[in-house]
Image (cartoon, rainbow, N blue to C red; front, top):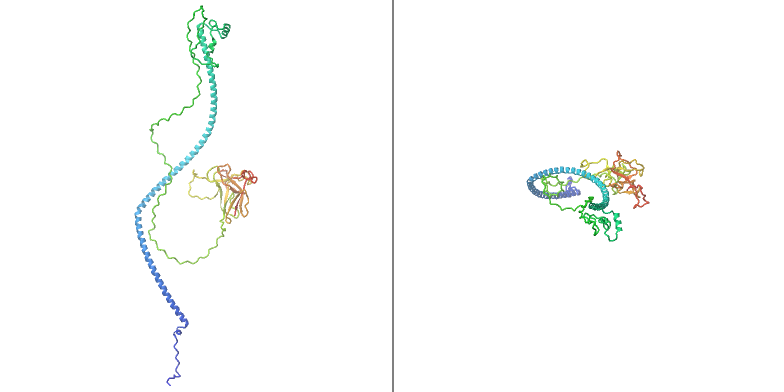
Length: 533
């Protein structure tokens, strides 16, 4: 029984399968994962290799571009080297221009000083013109009086001339009569007087030639009498014979010889000078005179600087940096998210807040923030130019470029003071001539502001910031100002109580007419209120 196994031999174990040797199902999973990891690693390596290839291509292209940029920069350097000479010339030209600017600045200062002197001279001339105008008006009145007196004297002179002419004619007539009588006396026969002649004429029959030696004296008297009774001046020899006619046929006497001609009468008294005649017409313009032989005048002063010239052409583009532009760095890794910030202050619901000026007070009312406080200012009350509104000026001004001293071509800012001459409306005159304080206020929770004149309360849903009385510049002052609302309990700025009479605050009164009275009362001071919403 060779085929039987011996009983003392140990049984051999059976050979296990491969799955059993690898650990069973868990080993199979590990193997699959390992294979997948190897495949993924291969894929990643392939992608990395491909990216490296692309990056190398980009680097080669970038190197080529950098080389081209370097060539352009070298050309630019050569161009700049050529332009260095032009730059030096430009610097020299700039130095000359700066010297020219300095010279013009000095001339401008001189001209400005001269303008100030001319302005002072103009002011003096205006005052002189005003004085001369007043004097001319007085002289005009005096001339009118003198003309009236001259006209009266002219009329009196005409009357006197007429009277003198009549008297002169009468004197001439008497002289002629005297000459005739003297001639008769020299001839030896004296004519009878006028009464005897009239008597003889009445006794003689009509047609008789009259008695011997009779002469017609009335003919002598009436020789110079005209039809209207006036006297006529005659200087020619008289036609009356200077002998006594005898009756015809008388033989007692022989006719005497003719007498001598009478003497010419004396010249009359010289008349008064006549009135001055009217001025003659203007003569023709004479020929131009010979050129003067005087020395050449001194050179005039330099004229005022001309207007600014047109803008020059744009210069060449400046040189950029010589170095090559570096490559753009890679984007960094995004940082960690920051912590949440602190919560901000509450907003104003889109209103933005309201700003207003509280006139007559140094601080703002409760609920408002004082932005700054200061003093009121404005233009001079009698200056027609300058600003037309009051300004709240801070007490700590800041300066930029400035020139000390008042300039002619400037506007002026003056301090303001109260002009309260009665106890109305503030209950006292203690603030008269005191400077006016002010405060600029900010309300963060309300975005609208309203100033209501003639009311001391605000509409519904509006908040009254303060109330008081309207004030402005005086009605007849040249420097008009805006109407502002001054607090009903005004204060005075510290240290300002002298009467300067510069910018002024006067109460505002109502005037009936176009204003609806009796709702408004003539001459009553107007209230006001500042409201926000």
